Image (cartoon, rainbow, N blue to C red; front, side, top):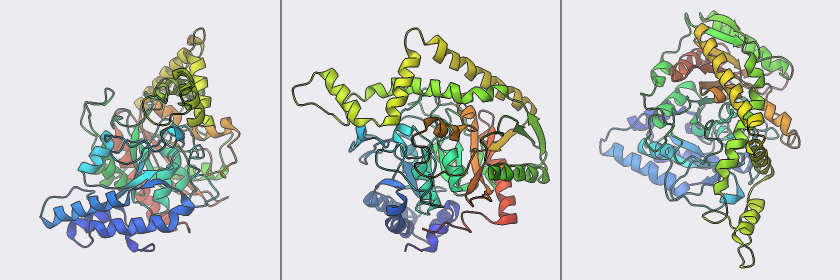
Length: 499
């Protein structure tokens, strides 16, 4: 079963075979559970595998089909869920010791919608603690390996989800993106990851890091699979005050009819230069040439405020995290340390946070608390919000000239585990190309655009679209993907990494 051809099917193919009766949902689920059992000891993509729950969901799908009930477009397809979404009856740790063993009493909206669509949830994936990181090394439960090279990082914070896809442990996954945590892992693992427009996917039940930036989204191995998953999880949710009350853009239709003919595609001069790996730039330039060949008009753009995005982000995100993580006090749920009758409530809270939070989380809480403190608020947090406005204005001006913007997703390919562990600034630079989109709230996608010649590791192409124009991502992404497959074959499906 570990080498079953089932695990190499796309989500769309799997769903079609289940709907036709060629495969049962139980067969598909068992094949992926067997794969997890065979390889995840090496990859460490999952923090919790819900074997019984997954098989029960699969049996329910098969019963529906046997009764002649209509199945959804992803019914019976297995999925790996990032461990930041609450799941009733299943542990949700957010990669932190402070929530070790916590069993939520309710489902996040994303979890509910997956279940309602009969998607089979295999388990919860590893991540940087509270989604703070770019490598999944900040997980309290140990790092995840990149299936292309297990000594390399799989990206972060959603490295568990991307690694599950790249190692064929699941055909679909869910991630979250605060500064690039869906797109950067997708880029370094040769998969597809989409950050929808902010507010396009409900944040209810998604443990908060930075509320004005966090966004859940789909992860897959193909553009169409990502679109099918996007359609399942997106849409207005009255439980989320930031949820957009508007129809979901026609993402599946766009993915099925990919084309860039006549489109204007922007290339931002700030998204290259010092610090960019030669092979990444080479593959990006080839992608721009390919877009021209497919009928797109390439427009050079100058967005000067993008150079300030990293600095603004690392004031805004920590400030919001210092507020959001105040709820983890050892008094209501999760870890409680020092409660032996000799400590005050304040001391219990302090001891709990000392024991439960990791170094990166503590670093960001302290940075954010300082930026919000009296006498420094205007100089730091206030100034960062002004820069955020300038970045949004740069995007607005750019989208007056172009339909989408393209860039490398990350400046480099996957770096070795441990290489940047003691250098936070070098780690933060991994999100150089992705952060501006989060600050502005736009939609963005990363998809594979080949392997870097110097290390034979995946390179990601980022596509950015205006707010609520998520369908443009899929229209362009599908066209680029089809052209790449025709020219060179899909780098992941046809040259699958060896485990």
